[in-house]
Length: 337
Ligand SMILES: Nc1ncnc2c1ncn2[C@@H]1O[C@H](COP(=O)(O)OP(=O)(O)OP(=O)(O)O)[C@@H](O)[C@H]1O
Ligand SMILES: [Mg+2]
Image 1 (tube, rainbow, N blue to C red):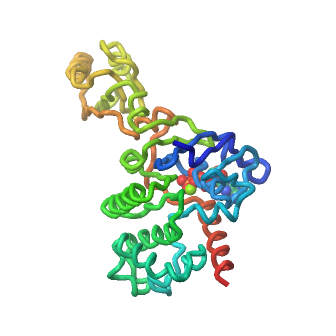
Image 2 (image 1 turned 180 degrees about the vertical axis):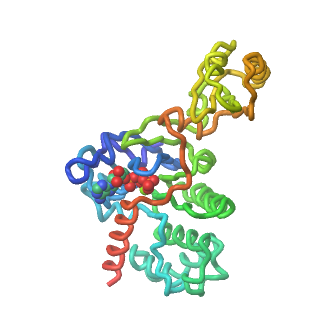
Image 3 (image 1 turned 90 degrees about the vertical axis):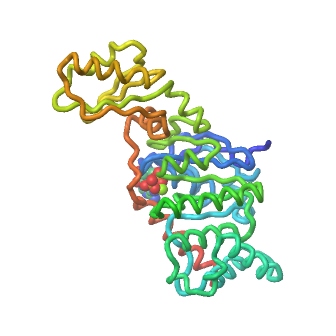
């Protein structure tokens, strides 16, 4: 299958000193859902902005659907769809009017517009509210409308920058179900960024973990989990338990022990058989335990493993996101006039 996105040594330096993206290379196959996962300021939005010709790379190159993003800006914009975490829809227009406007902006032929708009309104469960002002829409409806706007011209590659931030779990699940279904129906490629590890795990065919502008790990969710090499037993001792670390390390089958905030993470091939040994070791040292839990590796662990930090899911957009967002809104308003 051909590559829909190719990035080679893509870098972006702001103000001559801030290396927001630092030599990122990856490729995304046609029809794949590819996720960029990383903490605030990791360089996700900057990468997505370069791939969508919103920002020019400082060095490196990228192609999307076979077009060089630095040289084919107009053609590129016709082939890609963009959805951002903040709403770009006009709150004082109805859902349908927003879609009509988007259709005109993206060059959908006038005679095809009503059919396309109806199709998307139905597809995204917005048909009943199509003629209501967008300012009366719920958060989930607004997100679905953004997706409809992004899809209006049937793009070959859809870019989603944290599109579900702020939605409740049900809203997020509904949103991703629609994206998955649309992908299956159209064969389009999807590039997304997210703070939600569980989302990346469930939705993406492949994932890249980005930290400080660099990809620190990539692969399918299960490849990434396999790389951790087994189960993780988390041991929470009561009170001072410095002696427990070496005792855990000495248990048969333990491959590593890390301590963070008084909690030990113990890696081993089989957590079930390790737990009684952990309890025995703690008892032998006279150390009480507040809890012992077993986790199959999730992307949370993958993230911790490759970045050395816990992933924090509750952080909002950075100032950069807002600035990029505002410039896009201004661009789109200019386009409308
Ligand atoms: N226009 C700019 N001028 C200066 N620095 C910038 C600019 N845009 C981004 N940066 C910096 O580049 C880095 C990467 O920012 P970016 O917005 O790409 O991160 P992100 O991974 O999208 O973060 P978040 O999860 O918060 O959205 C940050 O340190 C940010 O402050
Ligand atoms: Mg961002």
